[in-house]
Image (cartoon, rainbow, N blue to C red):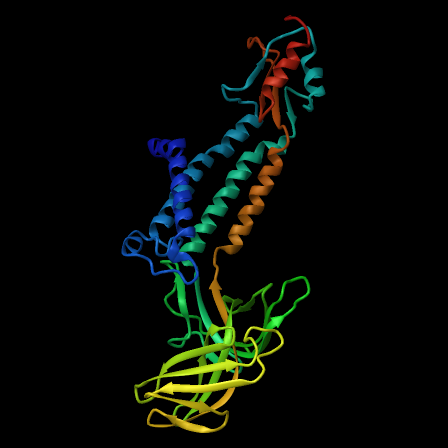
Length: 403
C-alpha cells in the first residue's frame, strides 16, 4: 500500500497524466472529423477512441488515474493539518533562535494570537490546501461521471410536426458515454410555432420555438425555447440548435402526413431527395421570390417534383402522382433543429468549482501556527506558515542580537 501511494503521489505520474489529457483534448477538439460537416473519422481514430474522444475509454481511464493521483495526494492531509494545530510540526517548520526581543510580542505583531504555548494566525486558512484538493476531487469525479454516463442527440421538427424521441429514426448524431443507458428518452415533442428571425432583447438575431412536450406520467405542457436557455423534459434538457430551413408537408394516400425537410442549396433554393412509395427516387425543389433566410419573408414560392425523367409543378392542395398512388402538398413551412442532453455530472462540476474557489480564497490568507520554545529545544519559537516563512525569519533577525 505505501508503494502504491508513493507511485500515485509521484509528480512525474501527475505530469504525465495531465500532459496526456492536454494532448488528447487538443487533438479531439480540433480534429477535422469533430468539426461541423467534417469528414468521417478515419479507421485509426476509431480504433484508438478519437472518433468520440471525450466518451472513450482512454480518456476516461486517464481521468480516473488523475482522480486516484489527486486522492493519494489528499490522503492523510487532514491528519497532518490536525497535527500542526496541536503543535506537532513537520521538519520543514521555521525555527526562530532566541534573541533579545520578546518572541510572543513579535509574533503578536505578525498576527499570531493565543494565550498558551500555541499561537495561531488565520487558523481556518490552514485548511485551504485541503479544501482545494477536495474541490479537485469533486470536479474530477464529476467529469468522470459526466463523460461516462452522459447522453445526447439531435432531432429536427417542422412546424406542426410531432415526434417521439424514442421512435426509430427521430434522433441522429447520438453521442453517449460507455456507461450510458441504451434506451432513448421516452419524450414526445411537437413544434407548435417556430420563429427563425427573433430579435431577443440582449441577443443578436436568433430563433425561438414553442414546443409541446409530453413526458410519461406528466401532463402535456407548452414551453418557449430560445437560444439563451433550454427546457427540462424528464431527465433530459432540450436546446434550440442553429440549423433551420424550409419544409413541405405531404399527404400521401394510404400513408397519411409526411414532412420533407428541405436542405438549402442557395439563397432562394432548397431541395430534398426521397424515395417514393414505389421505390423510385424523387426530388422536391422549392424556389422563393426572396432569400429563404431573409427576415422580410420568402415572397412567392414555386414548388416542383423531379422524378421518372420529368418535372412536375406542384400546387398546394392539388393531387399529383406519387409512386403507385396520389399525394398532395398539405402545407409549406419551416423546420428547426434541436438537441437533447443527459448531464448526470454537471451539478458536480459546478460544486467542484465552488469548493475549489473556497480553497483558493482560504489560501489567500497567510495562515500559520507558532509554538513557543520548550525547555531544551534551544528555540525561541517554532513556526509553521503556509507562506511567508523567510520574511518572518528576516524580521526576527532584525529584532536584536542573539540572546
